[in-house]
Image: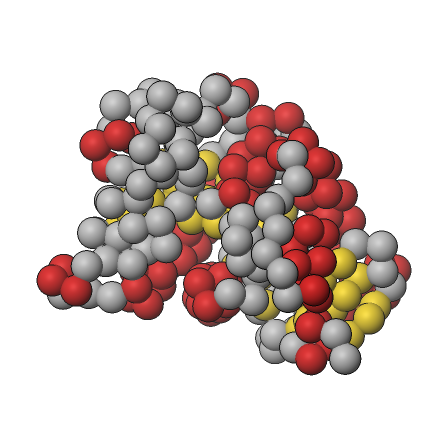
Length: 251
């Protein structure tokens, strides 16, 4: 059996997907023509298309916990593995991600499939590289909002190679959940950037890129992942409430 079959993923057509989304249980599909998709929770507060980081797919411990906590807070998570990650998992060999434009096109294909399947607006987001891709998508397309767990502001030890030039084109709300010690953008680094009024940065005490704090901090990675997801769900709910108020003033 394949990696995904062993993990409980079942094949499904894109046409059959809408009838399977409204369930409180975790569902795992391989969508014909698209790839692996995990669906967690119902969209009581909203829903989000979530992409993984460069080195591990959406079944990593970090991604599973982050997604599960979001779902427990009423945000339906639609978590995907991009094609290169699917090949990596099936072959058991590490490989680098393709050029970001190719990854962005694949992410956009998932968005176009999923956005009409429910009335609730679809947010975009991801961990590290996946979050960067989501932010690039939001700079080119209208969407409800962006959630990023550990934004890669620059490569480690290369602060001059900033990846924020597209932020000015993002019109929707964006929240970045960042460890204070993240080598891709520490607290001291990021506080010197002009990110825009629509960008909310939440700092996770003593966390690194995977939200792992030092032992002396008195906390642990699981606590910080949950804290990040709870902040993200609150952000989604707040934006939904604000949109409802704005709409009510117009009718």
